[in-house]
Length: 457
Image (cartoon, rainbow, N blue to C red):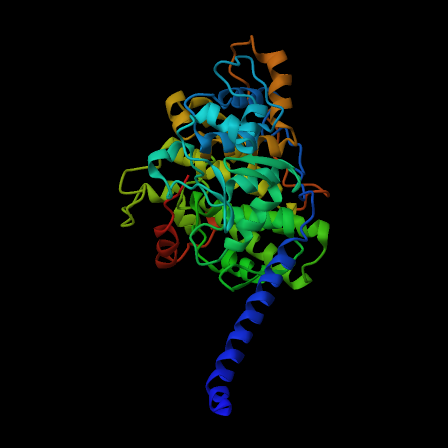
């Protein structure tokens, strides 16, 4: 009788024991892989100071237009403003403009969040059995304005702001650290979702050179898979016309300059991809200097060409139409932003960069205030890009300019006319085909790339 019972129960016991052992081992792998991040994030410093790109007065005038307004409360605007201005921002009209310290407290202390957003508004961060979760706009559309707009954008902004992992946070139902937000984000991470750009930026700044880990679904995540996802997809995949994937790629490359963990072949592959993008940008740039969402088409994507023909893509560029001013600013600002942090050897020629930045300055001074506020998030990237090309802290540049230019009503002059430099010994440039001689992109390939370029801002 005992032998018969054993024949039935022993296999079941073995299977259950194996499952428990696997569960314990898997949980240990996840914990072990995600608890070893550095306390301080990698800082990706700007590399240039080129007055031809934007003069001191021009930079002040642009920054003065993107000071962060306090009301109405908007999480997406605040996270972009904090990313631009940092915690030190403190402006001349405290009633109208929110300070950097208040924006910081809005994200780090739920008590302050409730003071600004209202006690009836659901929390932005919350402790759950899965860890610290962030309320996204898909989770609660009725409270859209106070939700996170992009997956892990708040975490990426913490990293970009130099926030250490042991920084305390007060959430609605307890206390935690930034480290807990990072752990939950990385466990939730998978490459099948539409948005992963800010997750990669957070990984690159906080966890790299950790090469791999397992998410909560049991998938192995590794850095090579991340790079494949960025470099093998369509150039316009992802939010903001694909620009944030390029930003994530630059962050990983620059983080590796400090960690020295990539194989040489991997670094060369990243450089080659960025050079390819740079070539497309040179070919697609308009005579005035801006880019549109059709930049992946190369010469065919230049608005000088697309305005002449009808494009069956449902985007700007139908016969006789051109992109809106805010769309041009969005694309041009984002492209100049990642290029400012990219290795100099992948840059377009200096003339193309100066033409783009000077167009961007004039556009930012021209756009009306209503449109600027309505699209504050994506358009703030333009101001940050200009600061990066001068290696200037945005708030310091604004404060210095305010002392000098605030009472002057003149329109800032463009840089002194002089021959554009193509680069110097410290800033090598790749050789790119002149625009007139650039090869035309295959229309079908370009259409496939542009078809998915509707941006999430």
